[in-house]
Image (cartoon, rainbow, N blue to C red; front, side):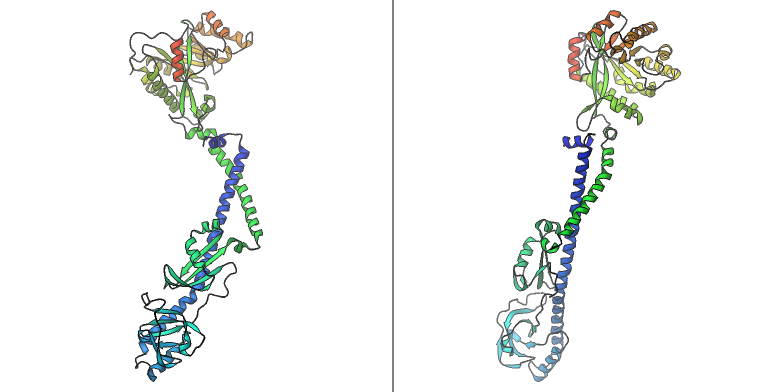
Length: 537
């Protein structure tokens, strides 16, 4: 999963993303086309099945209506001339049924065409007993020789004492070429009789019926339906090869159209996905306590030759688990007005870290960066309240990041309020921000942190020379001085030799550390814990 997310958020996989989007779109379109084809084929098969059953529905209606006419009109003595005459009248009804019989107890005594039989003809046990919704019994493929129809067979239906020869009904001769059918006469769920069409198809269809889409995967479609009486049933089968026949060019056209549409969708979908997975969008979605982590860069006291503090540096954990440095997300925080919320998250994280791991008896100066627009004591003091509680072993310093020009008059009021609450104030990146020299003189700050470009400058360069002048300038103002960006032991020793610099930090002293390595580093390079136990608020 992390690898897949990495592909989405990396800026070097646009081509791979486009190919993946095309492939997904192509599969979805192909799936959609297949589903449409499957539904259309199933619909066509249902229509054909109902068309095939329509004739049997009419036949059943005619049989029932003829029985009703016989029950209503045959009131004369059975097999009498008047009875037979009325029977002949009923046989002339336009329903196609013209051989009517009188068969009490399953024994034929007379019929329309044969009159009274010399010897009653027993029918024997029916193939379908009368225990059905129509109270009719059926005999299939009965030899009709006893009616003078030598060599002929037919279906005989009986209700009560009356019976008839049901005229044969066949499947439509004009069915589609791509579909095979079977007609069965159904006795029960497990017992039926093949009547016409492809023998065995009904059994196959009842065992393999399922959703149309599964039929596509199998390459064969089935459809089964019965008339409302549940007696005549028709099963249909169609193979994909029968559907397309020689027209595989149609398939090629479908694939081509799906490919072109998939490319169009991928082209328009890629920018949307890239915007959604852009760094700014990811950061804003995951900007919470769980994604912000803190590192601690040791602050080296040059006068005491000990680590006596740290600067809290925020990091952000991306969705793939990578740790992102602040230069990537701080502009986003400022752009969206999240600076105050960000400071509160960092302060809470650092307080939880340090109070849980700092040894008893150790006092620590903790420096935090704040944005100039957040220089408001009324809002900042409550944020730092846990660090300021009585008995805590922390000295809090806020460093004003000069990313924008600040009003000295307004800033002075807020700085005095912060100092009154117990928070020291430093100017950060002195020498690189707005009006730094003016602010140094006008604001009652506690200290100054020189921009790292001074300490990182090569020896004998202009910036290296200016480092000495910057130290003298800050020293003349009476402020504490922190030099950051100290990369080498030589530069550290040179700063010590001036006897003017209070604190130094940089990779030459230590990289920013997570809480456990920082506590270990502090134990080795920091002051020894006092014997008095530390109070935790």
